[in-house]
Image (tube, rainbow, N blue to C red; front, top):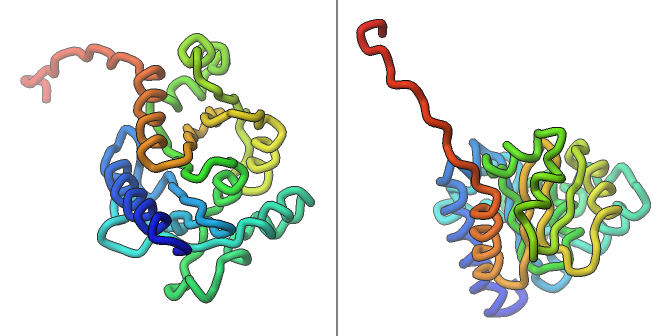
Length: 212
């Protein structure tokens, strides 16, 4: 990392990532990813690794942001293969960046959390999902992004909908992205958005033990 402050934030991000990865309401299997920008370098969860392992394993891979963003802007298919932008000298394990690396690079904030939040997805799959979310996220700068295939199509969809100040993305039929300047602020924003989008669990009938 470039500075001691960057190293401290990366350590905080690892701890938060592990916590998120252990919560099945936010992460299922190896899904979801987190990142931290340190100068021109984006540290992001590697493809195929699990957030829950962030404290016990080296799951973060460094990516050169500027050329990746240039590829997105040019609609270059290379943006669909972010491993081409990994910084080899800092990537001793040869990890591959997530296909959603472009999502994190496009958000201007320093810390980005992308989760497959069950409450968010339960709204994001609805035909009226955008309108329903709008009734819940008053006071938050958010944007709705219809479903696009992860990679360059999703990156372009996000780029077209980003506005100054937006720090929350609702990805149609996909999940939730929150962004902030510090890990602590990102964690607080994630908690706030999840609380606003929470839906009560439906009551279930008691099991018929005899029939079972």
